[in-house]
Length: 208
Image (cartoon, rainbow, N blue to C red; front, side, top):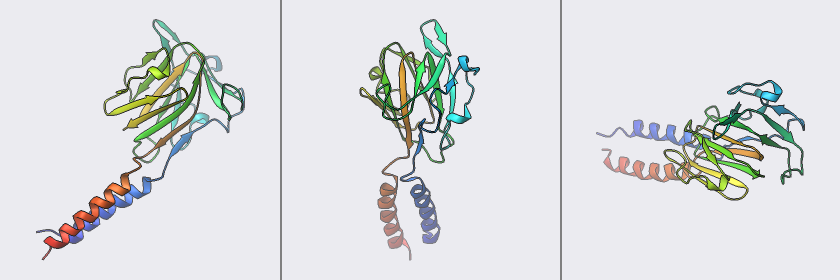
């Protein structure tokens, strides 16, 4: 026999959790950093080191090795000023270095992630959810099926990852990045709301 009160409470809890994440986002930009701030081996950092000043909104950012064939480096990530590298705001310029972004602390399941970028030559690195680092001649060459359950699309200035993303890495030899934005599933509440109403109606009909 259905217990209407128990089912209703469970559905309410799910809907409340979904509503809490709906419309939320977590973003890393570089506007609060001083122009010329540098990170990497040239600034005394080690591969895998988390840089607290780069993290925002629960996203931890680390400096990571850049790879191109047998070549490995951890040179410099430098904050560039407004108006340079085709960006209207302060942004990060990657010079033979990668940055890792850990999204597990944002407070919601990340189902979409976007990154703005401009590249000026050389090889790029990319990885999703701890997978192998992919070496690319250009970020527009990202494979669609970038990781299990995650798809990628890229145009000349933006990358979008769709699916469950917990971490990713991006690197380059002449690459500028900005506006790393993580969001939850945008249709979460709508889908659960419709499903919840249908189930509640069925439960009411089945309850003596």
